[in-house]
Amino acid sequence: MYKHDFRVEESGYFQTHYDRTKTSVGVVHLGVGSFHRAHQAVYIDNFMDKSEQLDWAITGVNLRRESSLDLRRLKHREGEYFLKTLASNSDSHFQLVRSHKSFFDWTENPHDAEQIIAQPTVQIISVTVTESGYYLGEDGLLDVDKVLNKSVSKNHDDGTVYDYLMKALKRRKELCKLPLTVLCCDNLRDNGNMLRRNMELYLKAFGEKDLNAWMQDNVSFPSSMVDRITPKPIQFHSQEVEKKFGIRNDFTIHSEDFIQWVITDDFRGQRPELELAGVTFVKDVSPYEEAKIRILNGSHLGLVHLAALKGFDTFDEAIIDPELSTFFDLLLEKEVIPTLDQNSPIDLKAYACSVKKRFQNWQIADGLPRIAMDGYSKFRQFLLPTLEGCFDRGINPECSIKSVACWYVLLKKVADGSSSFNYQDPYFSFLKPYLQPGMEQQFARIPEIWCDLPQRHPKFPKLVEAEIKHLLNRFQE
Image (cartoon, rainbow, N blue to C red; front, side):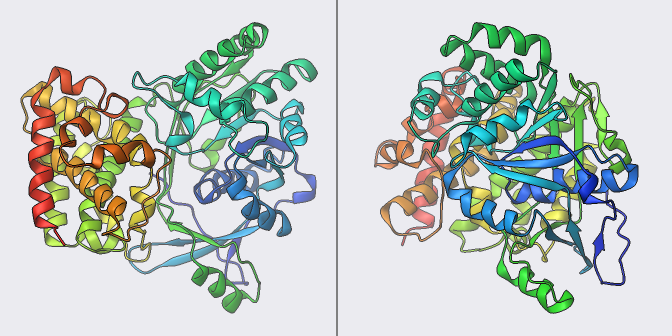
């Protein structure tokens, strides 16, 4: 658990002091969203400042047409932007983040976006494309048919991380030949091995035997756990920067003051000494990963739909609601923690308490739509293991069942127009047929979400159906 030591300059904000003109690119990051800019980019910025090792600057690569405007705005600011970190005690700090050296938009300039990987200085490709960007099937592996339909499109508007990596690694193999590391930083269990296995499947589907063999020998895929609550940016903080410091920067982001990064120490290329900036390197990241995914992400997901049904807008408001506060405690105490490894190196109860305090940070004002988005992909990752663990141990997963039912009811209300909640999910159209009357149990049998749980524990669909009917009655118009 790490908090950066802010040294406030006379200007009123913190910034690093290394010479950006002397930096070279060591990291290429895919998916230059707010989380990356509040997390990995900050670690790299502080690391280069402390170590004076300037060959680890970042090139950001955009993979989605919808994010092209944001990338252009970042390029206009030469990659510099402000991060405002907010503590629950009302403290706040500003940092001018300076670790990005260049940007490429794969949707507009695929050649240069792929060619950057062939540079010998590049040692790491880091990735944040959200859970839904990996196209996982019911077995947890790549849904080859689904991702191929995306990748064979003639333009790059809907290109996938797999397509980019295949083409970029091919350039690396042909032009550079040096080994490197692909570092997944999304909230997926065993994310490094997941990405490695899925890249192997993807290359096999395209008949890329030589590239696959080269990748086996020259590319590592360490797993990692990342943690920092980073809401969707709002214009207020950009306006505050201009008012306080006289600097116009309409790309200011904000996050909580807490930050953590745990990485499996398995780097095929060179690796930066990120320990100097607070990163933890371990042999096995799984205990940290599991605790974070199940406790933080699981409770976020477990509460957000009920919070939306009750009319809340932000999570800090929701978590102090008596019903939701009690629901959080029961979910963690009775269902999540008892189904985690009790020999974990982490004090699970203390971690759960710290998570609740972080959720209560009123300065963050984390909007519910951000937390609720991509439910199709998130429930399998964040809540299904708790359901399985409870049923296998004879524990009644009352809270988890309620979470599933709340998700269903909210989806139904969004679909029929009785709720204006801004639910975003690339699989929403797939889910809509299950929202019809009489389809409640079928919803609880969707194999891509619930795997074989309904077959192993047949009462699961019945419990979900009963809770859905109860909630529909409670939240009827």
